[in-house]
Length: 169
Image 1 (tube, rainbow, N blue to C red):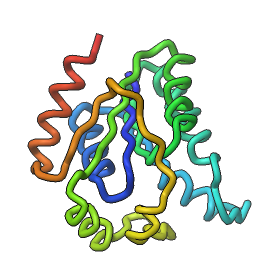
Image 2 (tube, rainbow, N blue to C red):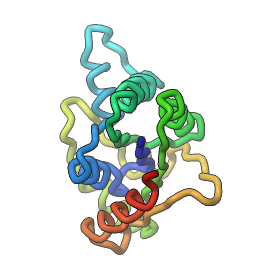
Image 3 (spheres, rainbow, N blue to C red):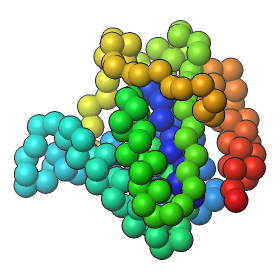
Image 4 (spheres, rainbow, N blue to C red):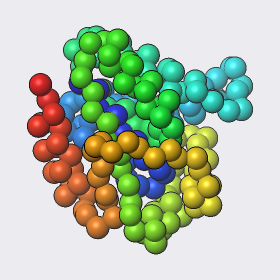
């Protein structure tokens, strides 16, 4: 199964997706890490554009074909990026679940964005204004959404684990 995490920076998606991957023994793919590696490569690219998503999806598909659980962590701000992950799962003949992480409390979300530090060499974190201004297409009704604003990380993890276990075939 491919578990696709999406959401704006500062919502808690990396914390939760990383934690979930560790708990269920899944391969963890983070587009920020892939893009930072591409930018450090001899290609010397300034903007990774869709390269991080394309590389991540290819790695996800390969691991799914090996029978691995895969957790993908990326903003997925537009429908086309979300469909790339879904396509990787379909090509590997595996189910997928999309999880949108939100933080409905604007003050808390801003606090998180402004107090974050990076764990990726060379990654420049977005400012609050860049998060607010970022293109982020609305999701269709019926998808799974987890609001982290008023819950502890452990409470969110418990909810995620329950959702994933119910979703597994």
